[in-house]
Length: 77
Image 1 (cartoon, rainbow, N blue to C red):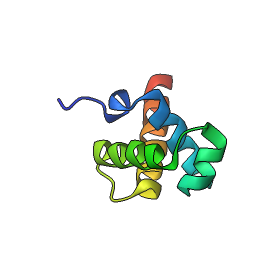
Image 2: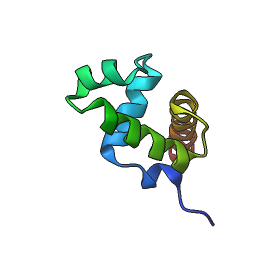
Image 3: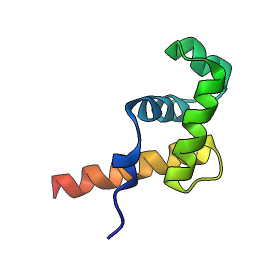
Image 4: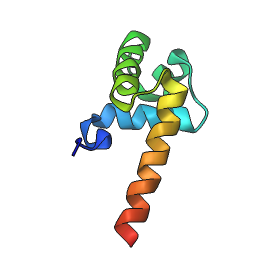
């Protein structure tokens, strides 16, 4: 069985993916919210996208949300 992609994400990646899901997707806007450098944000989100098998940060954030919902539903059953 493949390991859970959510468990492979860092806390910073999770925070950034949640912000992207909230509609904040530019590195500059994310930097203002997180006190990270835009280049660091690009790296975090690039790596998160690869981990989740997504082509970009918005697709990664959507995949992250879907996986969280699946895990939440599985836990409640």
